[in-house]
Image 1 (cartoon, rainbow, N blue to C red):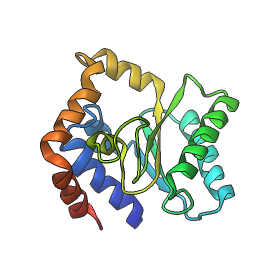
Image 2: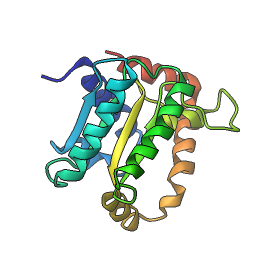
Image 3: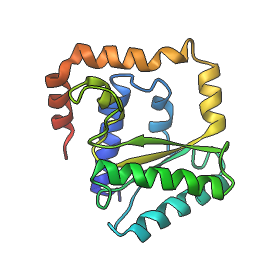
Image 4: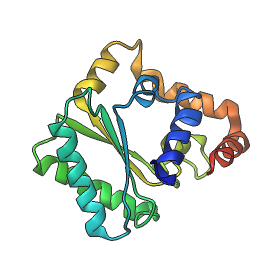
Length: 181
């Protein structure tokens, strides 16, 4: 049975990421059984690190058809954005130490995500905001294949910002509130 965190993340993926087409590659993976979403059941730094290492190992040892990608959910322990960024740096180091750099990449999402140099109220932050702190473990080969087969992938961030600007800050916040479990 899916946890409340998994249901919330799946709802956000479907109703925000896919419906707004913020990631044009997400639909087939989200609708398949090969998307793995795992929530950390503890706020302890040891449990958070253990989940990361376990999932990196599992993803690297699994076939793409069994686990295409993993989303790690951290409902507690990384609520502060600066703490999350520190852990994200540590996660990249762990990835490299495990010899998975070039095989798996990390994508980051947080409820308070802020791009450096952007105004606090910029809608661009919402391209990387999620209901909980998340780290998305992506297979490098899948990313490269998706980018090779998509016209002008470099325009995706700009298009996403335009989509969110059309919705406006109030519209985005209303949509996100409607997704809360």
